[in-house]
Image 1 (tube, helix red, strand yellow):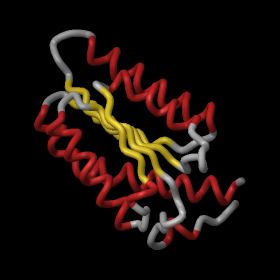
Image 2 (tube, one colour):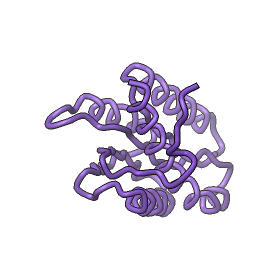
Image 3 (spheres, helix red, strand yellow):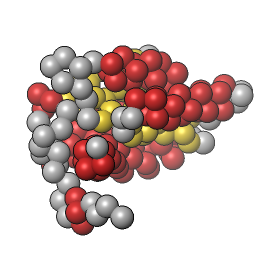
Image 4 (cartoon, one colour):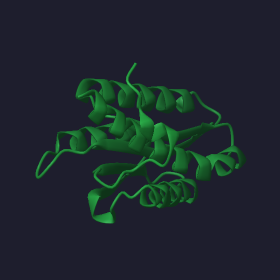
Length: 156
């Protein structure tokens, strides 16, 4: 067992570099996710100049942008990445396709690169469910990214 004292108190992200990929689809939701995420990163000490925040059209484009960020090492690599998006069920099978493919690709990227990626792509039945989750999931994504980045530093 390797103790992770960071989980017992305040997470310190002051030495971390974090990348965020935000989908533009459902912007009223994803913008709120991003605001909550950025506020929480700031609260944990992640410096604004060490956060790269990019936008892509939708959830299916998030993994490619995450992969591009994972390859950036100049002047230093990212310690964690965050995926922000919102997929709301419609009347077709498209919801399942987008949700499954984006989630699977994000998990595979994290494993391939040994890089924490917090997945905050909401998958909801309707807009009301997304609105109810947007703040907490944005905040949670920031906390997961910082906690996992600190854990990976401890383990390596």
